[in-house]
Length: 319
Image (cartoon, rainbow, N blue to C red; front, side):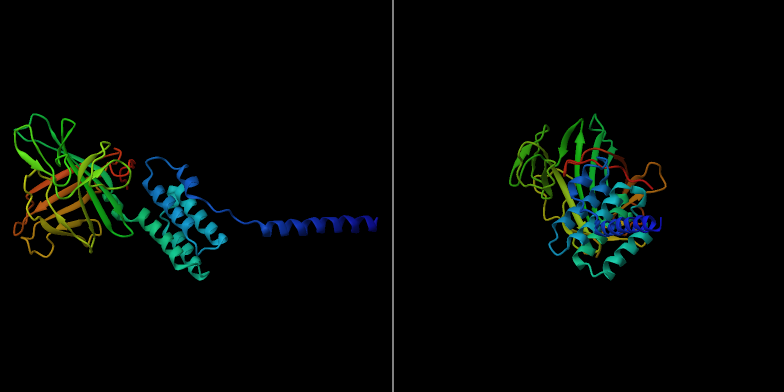
């Protein structure tokens, strides 16, 4: 009996030992960009940012396989579980672990940027915004579109704008650089200096291919790079335009965009999401100093329309 007990004990210990060894040899697998992207809701812009972080991680050559697996699994978990994406404590702890374990700085930066792009309050500006204005000389409402894109990690803001009447684009003129056309009223109008051609490919073109349309692009980096601005108008000669910059005000949500240093009269727009509204709306207020009240106020509504820039739709901002 004693020998039988010893034999059973030995066999059990043998299998337990090898079972533990097998468990120790188990490693998590690398997650790839396409795998995550294919599991996302088609309107989930935050999930797409996280999938893009996985793609950037997949492309890094400085990572060991175990490190790549650790990062891609974390970003994948955030992408597939929206309610956990902006848990500051968990995200900070993960980034601290990467730093402590001497992960390459470029990999840590990818994780940091992905989380910023998903969780920043600047994302309240990101949407396909539309508003309508009336002109007594026009029998149809005039729709103005601001297709607004935010990269919170770089603080880059890009707005693609059009004016549409009865389903037809009226501004900008649908002509390329150096070209002009004649309106129905006989006026000559030419290429808008800020115009780019969009066909849903995620790229901007200066030549039409028949699959998209011309949009007016205004783009700036908050607290950084500005741009030469021409208003959303039809002209034959647009003149020299005005230099425009954008800054974030102290409330960390309102953008002031315009002649910040006052060298061209000090005009500016205040752009802000109206978070007190349900659903959230958007406001653009134009000021021409020294006036302390706006020249005009436009309030915009969000729609999940497909973006002409990248061919993708996204959810409207929510609190």
